[in-house]
Amino acid sequence: MPPQADDADPAAPTVTVRGDALLRTEPDEALLWITLSALADAPGPALSDVSARSGRLLELLDEVGVGEAERSTTGATVYEDFDHTKAGRRSLGHRAVSRVSVRLNDPAPIGELIARATSDLAARIEGPQWLISLDNPARLEAARRAAADARRKAQAFAEGVGARLGSLIRLSEPGDRHVAFATGLRAAPREPMPVEPGEHEVAASVEATFALELDADE
Image 1 (cartoon, one colour):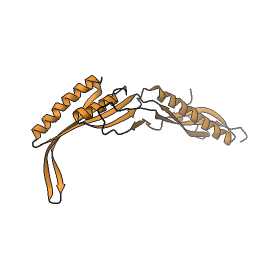
Image 2 (cartoon, one colour; image 1 turned 180 degrees about the vertical axis):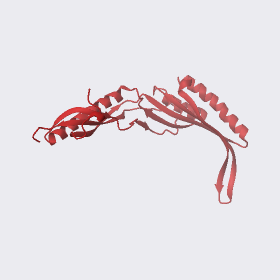
Image 3 (tube, one colour; image 1 turned 30 degrees about the vertical axis):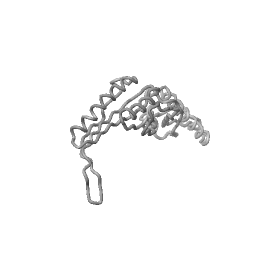
């Protein structure tokens, strides 16, 4: 077992390097945000309109296979809407808004969901935002490659000063490198929209400190 930092001789030569790795893999999750809104003369009718379409949205989510655990209402508001003119503010009525977030582990139904939500429910769509889950095997592979990169760099530094690379003293991850990529889809025809997840980047970094072994006469 390598010595801990507190056990290392502070006068002994060491080298500290940063290892990095970047690889590409298919995302395994996608996020969509679906917003329903309605404008009416009074708050009640506006809210009733949105409430009715929200019920139909839940039915749609059931149909495309989005379970209750994968959807969440993230906002519901009712407010008076205004138009700003040269003569001042003019009330347009009252607007009700409801927003639902949806998490999908399969990209297949995304196109149908976007098409039907926009055409049948006049919904506004944000997303999909592609995610690579924390337990995706690509993350561990990136970590292995980052550690190997750190050792290669340390070896090169050691050779550059005429030393031998010694044992590992410290290994730490400098920060969270959770990667997510997003793209916006605002509208869709009634036919399912083609949605391609593609491949996205997984990054990993590690900081490593190694002992340096010098010849006795150096």
